[in-house]
Structure formats: structure tokens, C-alpha cells
Amino acid sequence: GENVEQHPSTLSVQEGDSAVIKCTYSDSASNYFPWYKQELGKGPQLIIDIRSNVGEKKDQRIAVTLNKTAKHFSLHITETQPEDSAVYFCAASSGGSSNTGKLIFGQGTTLQVKP
Amino acid sequence: DGGITQSPKYLFRKEGQNVTLSCEQNLNHDAMYWYRQDPGQGLRLIYYSQIVNDFQKGDIAEGYSVSREKKESFPLTVTSAQKNPTAFYLCASSMAGTGNTIYFGEGSWLTVV
Image 1 (cartoon, each protein chain N blue to C red):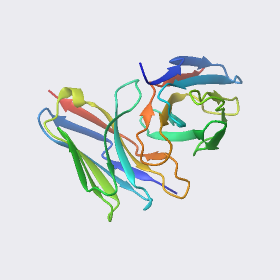
Image 2: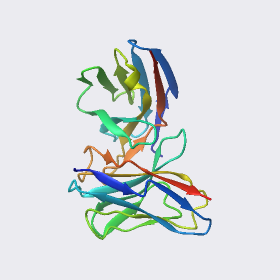
Image 3: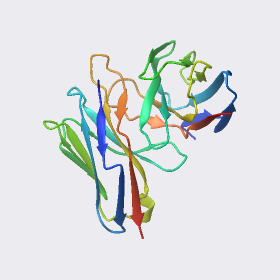
Image 4: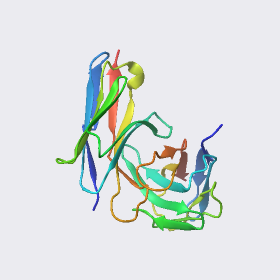
């Protein structure tokens, strides 16, 4: 079935360093790849997304890259700050002919930024 | 304010009871979703609805039921048939179709006592 694998499960960096989280997906029909940030006890919030017709997208300190041939995409956070500490989820749209908004989520990465 | 409102935030259920989680959105979105999140794990889709009076099962629908009588509302009932209901439940909504941003509510914690 459709699957999204996310690595690493935990990531600890020093403030100011970069953080990279990687995801692979199995459904070749997936064409939409959002990233969410979730703080403890709250709902996930979209931080950046990318569509299959684009290889890279950047928004200030956050960037996402997509390799459709290899079926993987990555989140890059530069100049990390303590407030970046949270759980990050990648997701891929569910393909098929149903044209729904279904997403398949990765298992999440707990990012800790040490001051 | 525009957004998705889930209630209650915390809910305790005795074994054998059905409970209903409320989800209301004022974003004028056609599609709504329910996800379940277990500690340290990702989100798994329970049910989704693309239009009023229609809904489909997700990956873990057993023991749950939904209704979509109004565009703004998508309540989730956790029935006694759900053997392990303790989890964090997230409601979400989006415009219809693929590639549209999915917005989440703040979640509801359900604990079986």
C-alpha cells in the first residue's frame, strides 16, 4: 500500500546549525508534498509545501527539495532557533483516480534545538 | 476568527460507551477529515468527506462512525467497538481535490478510564 518513510525519528542540533529531515514515498502518482510542524498538544501547522512540477522551494530559513525520480523529498532548516523545536511531519498526497485530498503522513521527527 | 474548532479538548470515556467528538469549520471548505495520532507516531486517516452527505472510510475506520449533514460540521463517534480508543484526534479541512492545503484543528484528547 501507500507509504511514507521519514528519517530521522529524532534530531538534536545546536542553535544556528542546519537541520535536514528526509522522506521517501511509495506512490508514484503522488504530486503534492506538504510539511507540518506540531507543537506539544496542538494541531499540526503547515510550514511549507511543494508540488511535483517544482524541484525546490524556499521560504526564508526553510526549504524543501523534491526528487520525483528517486521518490524522496527533504526539509532543510537553516540557522535553527530554539523555537524551531517541535515535531515535524512530512506527507504525500494519495494518488489514484479518486482525486481526493487524502494525505499519507510520515512517522514524524522530533527536532530539538539546543541554545 | 476563521478556522477549525474541535470540542471537547479533553474527554474521558468508560469502556462500553460511545462518545462523539465535534468538529466545526468556517473556512467554507468542501472536504473534511478525521485523523488519529498515537504517541510518537504519525497521523492515520479514519474517515474523510469530500461533500455534504457523503463520506469514505480511511485506513482505520473500524470502530468509528461519522456524519456530514452540514458543510461546516463533521462529527466523529468513537463506538464501543473501538478496542483501543485512547489517542489524540485531529479534525482537518481543505478545498476539494488534490494539492490543496489541509488545515488542522487543535485536537481532542480521548482517554478510556
